[in-house]
Image (cartoon, rainbow, N blue to C red; front, top):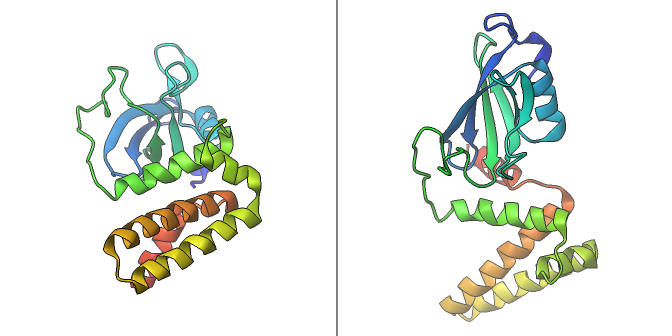
Length: 202
């Protein structure tokens, strides 16, 4: 994250423009303004919070609509007077119902669904809805989750040994899902795995 104390709040009378970017697509979602208090709340709450210039008060994006912006990271520009906020949007960002306030169409990618699935798994962990297989796994505990990863890995190996493409696709899908459950249970973000792989590639 950033050093809040070193930001230049004076250029805009205590406010700093904050550009919000979708972490999964790198697309711009909206522009808002933050003061030191809203920035502190954003970091503490994990949900993007702005200062409303018209209402003269703090507001957490989504507090009325449920379309929150879950904080991932914050960067500052070279002059320390503008913020780039990376977030995972829950629902549309714009009050019109659009994905972005700038009339940008969301990029569609098959790989993007992996992040969507991982966020859903994490939400299952926090909400534990009844009737969900994922909830059942989390309630069964660490050892059972690890055991399921092992079982799915073995089944993947058997499918590959048999050169059964259909079974390989199914078993790898099961393995990835159970790996996501294990990562969420261990408190590890999917980005940490991707970043590690990217670093190794270098």
